[in-house]
Amino acid sequence: QVQLKESGGGLVQAGGSLRLSCAASGRTFSSYGMGWFRQAPGKEREFVAAVSRLGSSTYYTDSVKGRFTISRDNAKNTVYLQMNSLKPEDTAVYYCAARASGLVTSGSGDYDYWGQGTQVTVSS
Image (cartoon, rainbow, N blue to C red; front, top):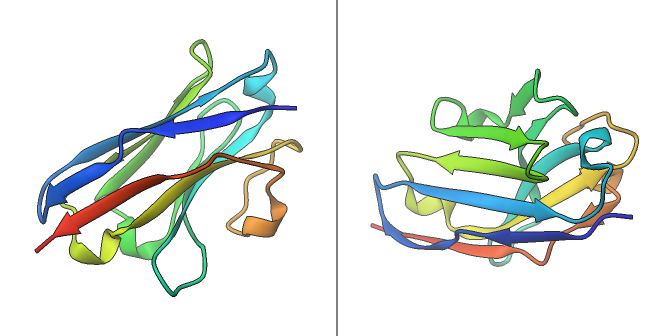
């Protein structure tokens, strides 16, 4: 089992940047596929990005390609989401998630563990 805790959210102006971190407990972090999801008020949770177990493969939803970068440091049990050129429509609670099988997908139902979320607000 793994416990996840996000940090790094906050309020930023449009065009600004934030870096989210997700710290994981446990000694098997490198066996988990990791993803970031977000949920805006009144909307369903949506996929943002994912990274494979060793960080060699990354995946993004179209709306964040070229602006967001997901990465992981298995030595620190941490996954990151660097968010640049932020837009008001990026405002949401951002969640990190872990998939025990190691494979990453864009489906929230495929992930086994979730953090509590961190709020990102982008002002226009």
